[in-house]
Length: 322
Ligand SMILES: Nc1ncnc2c1ncn2[C@@H]1O[C@H](COP(=O)(O)OP(=O)(O)OP(=O)(O)O)[C@@H](O)[C@H]1O
Ligand SMILES: [Mg+2]
Image (tube, rainbow, N blue to C red; front, side):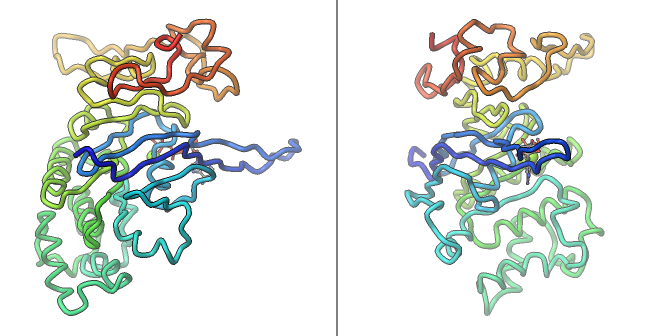
């Protein structure tokens, strides 16, 4: 499990926000800012962070649904950012994505059969035994082939996410980005879908990028994880280290906010945020500076780089590097 399937180097995505009526300039906004990480073959790499920190943008760039502004994505050693659309075509099959909202990601006008069949038709796969392949895929995700002529609206949320997983599996991918695949589901259904993803990973040697804002879910499914803050990875480690020995003040803040299921204890939202300070994207120094309770002078001057603090445990924080 040590071989890298995916290697991301200085990946950046900039969006240009059109200029407002009284402003002369268009504003360039870095949704993802020079992030580097690798995902080993057969592992699940979790990506956590607050809403808007760039998780989905990162996932979409890895499966080439979004074009990176700069940076490189190596898949099995090949730099995908060098390839044109025609060269990407055979590789696309290997890179699939499951989206957060199973209500929105399935075409409501297509039957279950048409939804699963579509990628097989596009990639001209299983031409002679398509029906058999569709039934096999449904079996993998625990759905009956008797449902083939039903429309997405006739299924529950959990069943729709199973359909989305079957569709993602249809092209025998090696890598799947699961972007908040359970956050729109009830807690009991969440566990079923997470366990299904784990079983399928073992069965088909899949590698996952698992995106979520829910730290408990990420710990349950991931081997290693990265914590994102305003477009940057601020901490990265194997899950045991990250959750039991967090380094970055932001990771500590996120972990402290996980509610503990103790009926005796009243719930308190624990945060080290300084009162009255807003999230801001500042040009100099550490992006977390305005919210950090442990900040030191250097944090305002220098942007901290992601550095290996202990074997396999990376953090971008001046507390550990100065
Ligand atoms: N097409 C776009 N044009 C302009 N800005 C965009 C575009 N797509 C995303 N953004 C911005 O980039 C930032 C990162 O968005 P992204 O969807 O990656 O965040 P996220 O971490 O997935 O958030 P969430 O947890 O809410 O899904 C956000 O501020 C978002 O508004
Ligand atoms: Mg998102």
